Every structure is written in structure tokens, then in C-alpha cells.
Image (cartoon, rainbow, N blue to C red; front, side):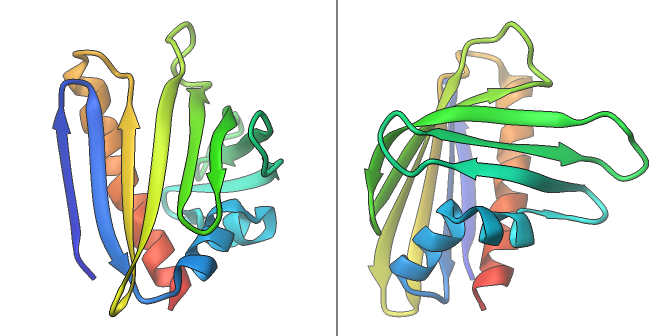
Length: 151
């Protein structure tokens, strides 16, 4: 496994190689049952209620709960690009950032000898360093969970 992240000009970029085929990774990123199984952990937050209407214009959303908290977080968006098993792109609107414009997430899946290189580019943050730092940590966590689930 290799993971790198970086931020520049309101963009978070995270890359990891996963020991699974692009088809398997694409399904893990789009199938609600699979997403609920791997996206989250008991010590950080658990996701549930995934919706993945896998078509351009289709809804992508989930809810999450942190340990010891009763309030729910929600992330919603819509698919902008759906090219199995190579590219997913969708908008991202998080309930913990009310009033901020939606950002964009693009995930590219490239076959490599060991499996799949997953590249996440999350853009549209402007010059808010605190915000990009938080998402850099978040995408590092998410890709680690994905890598573990793909084994």
C-alpha cells in the first residue's frame, strides 16, 4: 500500500494502490451495501443509509454517526461522471458545512500490476487551508478503510 496526499489551491489529492481489480474497487465505491460495510469505523464514525443512484444526475448520499453522539451528519451530492470501472465524479455537500458551496470529488481507478491505483481529487475549497487540511486527513482515512476492505 502506498498513500500520498497533498493540497494546493483549494484541491485535496490522495492516491493509494489497492490490491483489488478496478471492477472490485468501483463496486466498493458505488454499492450501498458495500459502502456501509467499509466506509467508517467504530472509533471514528459509522456510515449508513447509503443511496447510490449510479447514473449522471443520480443521487449519492449517506448519513453518519460519531461514537457517543446522537446527532447525525449527512453528505449528499449527485453523480456528474459515471464510467465503470474507471471514473466516478460527484458533488459533495456536507451537513457540517452549512452555507458553503458544494465541492467536487473525482475518483480515477487505474489498473496497476498489484491491483488498482485509486486517485481522489476533491476540489472547490478555495483558499481555506483549515478546510483542505481536514479533508486531507479524511481522505487518508477513507482510502485506508477501502484498502483494508479490498483485501
